[in-house]
Length: 219
Image (cartoon, rainbow, N blue to C red; front, side, top):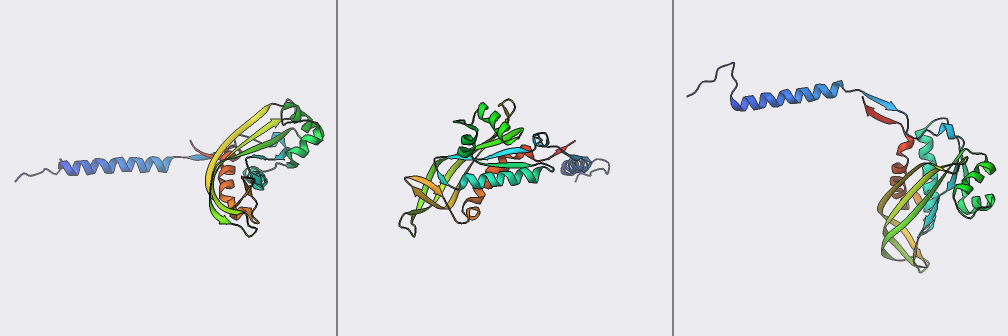
């Protein structure tokens, strides 16, 4: 029978003792860590009042782009205090008002002159990979649940130079309800769009507005 001296732990005890020491160091390090809140990467106050054109949509019809625009504005207000957003309306109407065919640098500059905003948000959704399943609606047309992929790109344009000050994209794939087909294209037209495809919109908006929110970082 071997005898272990009190001052020399057995092999198993030595392993456990070392593990406990490592755990204690990790706990103490975590307790000593300090976190601070830092300002958003994109500060909107210098651009306030900032214009917001209703996002455009590709390969789909309905209100998906309108819901995304509204949620984007709400997220911007939630992330920053003391800002003002001027909602300018549908892109086609804004372009007609400034006399430009597309949302390019000249259009951005004319938006600044027409609406008196130093910068303007524009966004575009692309719907793809629609995989429907379901039956007929009350009107006799197909009423579907569908797995769809949607990419949202939002840009902040300077109305002084027409250049891009900031841009961010996000992509999400979800199964959403109450999707119809109009001429073979998905139609997002639920009475309550938040219930029908709210999660899809929220995922996209949370991702693209990350730079608009304060961040908690470890010192």
